[in-house]
Image (cartoon, rainbow, N blue to C red; front, side, top):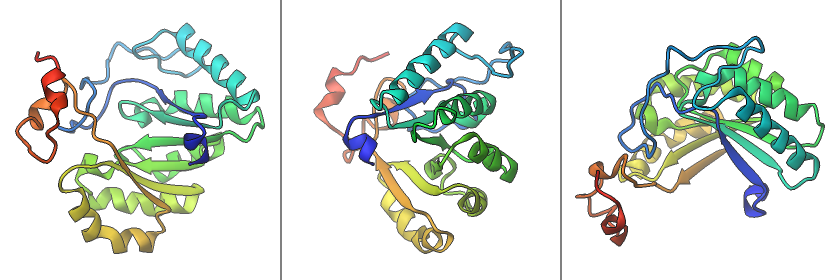
Length: 215
């Protein structure tokens, strides 16, 4: 929270592929590319070249060393489709001993106890679950139970949809019982990729719609 308020955080998009198809997602929905190749360092490079990601890592490490960056969030697409790349980044950042805070965003589908432990060991301190991606699935909430045992901080981060409050109220006791540290309601981004689902919804309507290009 302090890093955000001080404008000293960043979110790194590891790739665009996702294993969910959320109607509210503001990103272009693409499938994992079978042509993606894993280099000898174990990192899957999607959308950008190997040189791009190595250059980005250098910039992040320099910012961390100078204390102009205090937190990094790893996202996607679905971040856990890029687990090896995240672990590589996290280990490199952790090795600096700069105290930089690292966390990931995930829909939780691919999370296992082993993966949670690997993330923690690489330096990830927080997992943020987007429960809206699976309509507050009990299976994903169960995964949050062991995530709570493994990582230092557990967050639910969901977009502010019209049924969000109702679903939080329905599940709030479960969230408290399993030890959720924070519920973060993020702004709903409406753009060309999802606007068709919201254009006729009065609760989302703003004058911004008339400025969005129609494709």
